[in-house]
Image (cartoon, rainbow, N blue to C red; front, side, top):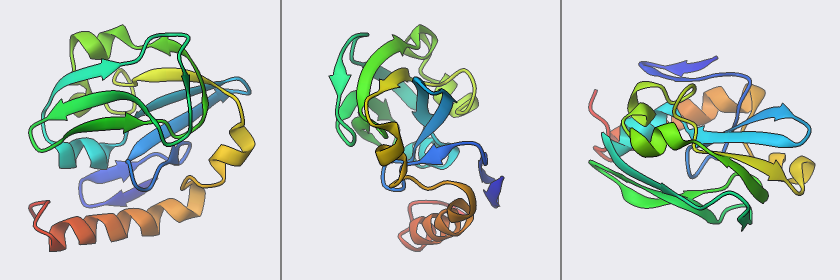
Length: 148
């Protein structure tokens, strides 16, 4: 597991470096998607989550929904292309789950990927995650976006 101070990123996930979205490969035709622990902490307390409906096709890097939090309002972007096959009703009903359980109950969608192998190539995984997380924490602290 990659860890810097209170921020941790599990080893089994893939991470969009820019969006702080995680992707968990559940089997060859399903990818569960959520916001990583660093991203939720930087965004602040999540107040609202909106997600596109099941059946909607999404391109990698395009919005599948939006999130409103104390320090962030903006799109949630897909780490892989495909079709939304499941939406997490629990996180829609209780958006604060994103802050309390980012890798468990707070996932957003499940995607049936259309080009998984290619899409995973641009995501951080394995040994790439620790140095990326260290850099992100330093950069956000230098900008005053995170408190020590």
